[in-house]
Structure formats: structure tokens, C-alpha cells
Length: 340
Image (cartoon, rainbow, N blue to C red):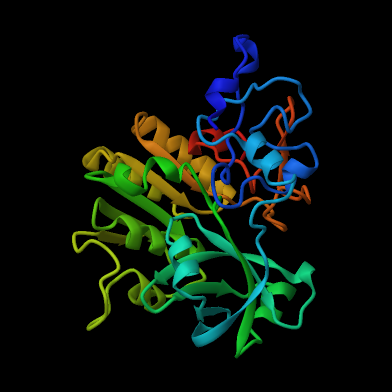
């Protein structure tokens, strides 16, 4: 059943202020349908009309015909640790055996999961971006930066980790860059520290379709890590386009903005992806829109994500006209600039 045939004639009810990253997926309807907080469906919000702008399978119809239950709720499962590598005292990479099906689901850039140590309580869950996938082996790669209690308990594991996912909102604005939309694009990725981890997955995913350049600030990581997951190591599978150009710059340097401005002017990128902290999203995002006003802008989702389901409210942002759940909403990169 298609939502279009249920629409009201009143156009004032057809305006949607946000999009849901899970709508139409195997995880829809989700827990928000149970509480009357669905981001898409006006019927599930308690209204007596259909005012959504979703042209896919009707969320309300799926919920009713599914006996008002959550569809395919994400559940914890144990993932065997195949191997791990310590790069320095607070940077470690895990390779997990998750099966081909799960590895295939998290191939999309911006995918992440929630992980914790096997014996830990659920409040130790921590969101981790997928850095690399090997679907044939059923393996995924996770980079963990040791910061405090959650990550300290996580890296103490040698045999298994408890993980839950996949979640899809790790990068806002990425939908304009991935898949067939990436074909023949010129893409610039700017990453700082552990933020470069999801950049490796982007390179793996779209590197054969697009021309990718990277600007990397290696603060708190190391070039060996970059070599292993950005540069193709000798005798291993290439993870990015061979024409990729990587430049190392300190984003704290006052001259970096001038260098980036010149780079963007010379290359005239179609898309720019910022995998940096909120401060640099605001600073560099404004620079991108000034130099390349027509370029697609994608930015990392740095909000405090705890549950990933839109329930706990830790990642909510008050817009003045309502609250946005940043773990569930799919926004354009430009829309994030105003929230920094």
C-alpha cells in the first residue's frame, strides 16, 4: 500500500520537517511507532489524517498489519574477535566476525553499531563507526579511541564483543554522495583524528565510482593507521581509487583554511565530507559553502548517541518548533551548520 493514495487534499498538512533514516527499511516501524512519536507518519503521531510526504510503503499500514509491533528490532549478539592491532597506547583496531549478512548491511557509509564488553551492563554501550567491511569473510573493522570508562572496558576484551545494529545516521548528508550518485563525482574528505575511520569506509564504498581526495589531521592517531586503512598496503586489497591524493594538514594551523580554500577552488569538488568535531564543522562548513556553494556537504554526526532508537533523548536538539532526534533524523549537511 502506498502512502500517496492516503493523502489529504489540504497541502498544509503535507509538509514534513524531517526525514527518518530507518523509514522503509527492515527496521520500520520502530519503537517510536509504539509511543506515538513516529517521525514520518502523522497517523502514528495521533492525527486523524495522513499528512506525510513519504512515497514508499505506508508505515501506518505496516504497523497495523504487523499487529502493532516493532518490525525486526535490533538485538545484541556476540561477535567473535578475529584479531586486533594496537597502534599506540590509546588506539586499537578490532576485526570482528559478524557473518556475511551483517557485514553487507553495514557497507553503506555512515553505518555504525553499538558495542560493549560481554560482561558489561547495557549502559556501557558505545557507538562505533564501521571503518571497513569484508563481506566475503563476514568481517568488519572497528577503530576504537580509548578515552574513558566505556572504551577502557571495551578494549579489555580478547574473545568477543556484544554488538547491536546496524544504525545508519553516522554521517548527515551522505545520501547525496553514495551509491550511483557518486559516479564521476570529485569528492574531498577532511578528517581529523579517529574521525578518519568512517572516511576509510567511504573510500572503500565509492572509490571505484568517484575521484576522492583526502585532507587528514593525524592528531591522536598515527600514519601507520592511515597506511593500513587508507593507503593500500603491499599485497592487500586496494581500498580506494588509485588516483586518491592524500594531504596532511593541521586543522589548528591558521594557514590551513587558506590552503583548503585554494584546493577547493582548483579542484572544484562536487561533494565535501567533514569528519571532524563540531567546532571544525562550523568553521570548515562555512568555508565550503562560501567557496563551493553548489557542492554537496556531508558532516559527521557528533551528537551524544546512547540508544540509537530515538527513545532516550540524549541526542535531541530543540529547534524552537520541536525536538529533533539526531540518531533517527536524516538531514543535509547544511542544516547541521546552524546547530553547531
